[in-house]
Each structure stands twice: as structure tokens, then as C-alpha cells.
Image (cartoon, rainbow, N blue to C red; front, side, top):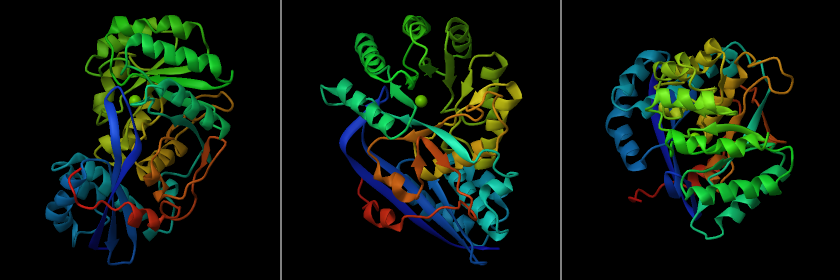
Length: 371
Ligand code: MG
């Protein structure tokens, strides 16, 4: 089963209303989708989220010439080689080659991993709370309220990018106005020192609806996380930028995180990503994949969760929440996935098992200009 062709689909969308987090305001969203075709007629999709000009050139000059003529079943070796050039490209290629294999044996991705133990994956609505609008707090509230109306019972909002008093006001306003049953995640994107992070404990202690405190500190400091975790009354989560199981191990060895958050895009491959996911079970902590960027990466994260053993015996919370991008981003429509009442039904068809929206590929194709 030789690789005969690779088709690239760089997609770009300029936001009508820029939004962001403690890392800054985003003006656009982009994904680099590609499809690998084989001599047997099977094909698979891969996805990368990175700078499109570099990805397109890297694929045309190096990745595609390397892949053409290779055996698509040699996934491990092909991905290993590409990861030495560009880690994110390797991860995307691993998705495409896995899908090709699934198609060639007429099975779903979950079948390859032993079958889906969870048919539904609970989602949390993920928001980028900051905008350039002076009324950003009320905009944030209206977005969260809309998600609640759509059936989401858990939401993530951002802190850490404004003055502390403004963030406190924002969160206090949300907690006061929102329904009693909503679970709220606060994500600081590594903005604080330990003392400042501890200042949030007073707010967490007053309200049982906070689900977790995400990346309050730089993940360079394992011992600071250990200190904070012992102090805080709610779960501490993090690790979206860590690249493999080895990088997560110190946090687990030192009981520094309650929930690990690996991201497929930041791992060498889908296989390495699953190794990290399973590490959570080994250490008896929860795993909630970071999946804000890219619909295909998000779907693979859902597959990985679906095939994991239960996190605990509590009814209704036996598998962890998955992040769901609820901001303005039409690129997410690339995959026809239906969310009902804040849950995703795992596709059961061959390969990734869901339809591709080719209109998205045409409508948002990047024009080749530097942005
Ligand atoms: Mg985060």
C-alpha cells in the first residue's frame, strides 16, 4: 500500500470580532489539512495547527517528496523521521496514516484501539473571554449563557490577561448571574506566581461550581505546582504544551496536577498522545485533553477518551470532559459532528466515521498571502 499523492488544504479565517486570552488577542484562525492517498485507493486526513506559509513550504519541499512511494503501513518509522524535522507535521501525518490503516481493514479508529468503551463524550464549552470591546465582561457572560441554552453544563473562561481586580469582577459577575448547576473552569494560561494564584482560593472556597484551575503557573515550575495543589481546595490542571509522557511524569511523580491536559498537536504522534493519556490512569489522575485547535485533532481526542477505562465509579462522570471550541470559527465545520446537550456521540463508521464538509475547504482556502 504505497503512498501515491498528498493533497494540501491550508485554511484561513479572519475573525470578524477578534478574541483572546492571557496570551493575547487572535485576529484569525487557521488549520492545515492534508489528505494522503495510497495505491490501494484508501486515503486519510491529517491536521496541523501552525503558521501556514511554513507548513505549505515544508510539505511541498520535504514532507511530500519523502512520503511518496513509502508504505503507508510503516507509520511508526515515517512519523519518527518527520518528527525530526517538524513535530507538528509528524503528528498530523500519524492521523492520516492511522485512518488509512483503519480503512484498509474496514474498521473504525476506535475498533483499532480495542473498541469504544464510552459512546458519548461529555464536552465543556471553551471560551476566549477577552475582546477589544470595553464591554468584554458582558460579552463573555452572553456567550456562556448561549452555551448553557444549547445544553452545555460546563464552561471554560479565561483569566490572567487583565488586571487581577478586573478578572475577579468578571468571574464574580458570571457566578452571580449563571444558573446554579453550571460547572466553571478558570484558565490562566500560566500567568501567575504562586502567591497570586493562591489569592484565588478565597473565591473558590465560596462556590462549589468551580471544576478546576487551569495552568495558573508556568509549567517550568513543578514544585510550585506541587505547593499550589496542596494549598488549593479545587483541582489543578495543566500541561497542554508538554510534548510527551516523559514531560508529564515529573508532575505526576510529585502529585503536582489533578488533571493532565495533553494536546495531540503538541505530541509527536497520535500513538505518543495515547501513551500520555494512559499515563493518567497509571497515576490515578484525570485526563482532559486540550483540544481548542482543530476539528480533526479534537475528534481524535474524543476517540482516545472513548477508548479509555473509566476515570472513577461515579455515575455520570466516568469519562472526563473534552474541550469544545465555542468561539467564532467556521473552520470547525470541516467535520460534520453533532453535539446534543453538551455531548458528542462517537462516530462509529469506517476510519474517522464522519462526513467531510468540502465546502469549508473551498470557502476558506488560504490565498497564499502572508497574514
Ligand atoms: Mg489552557
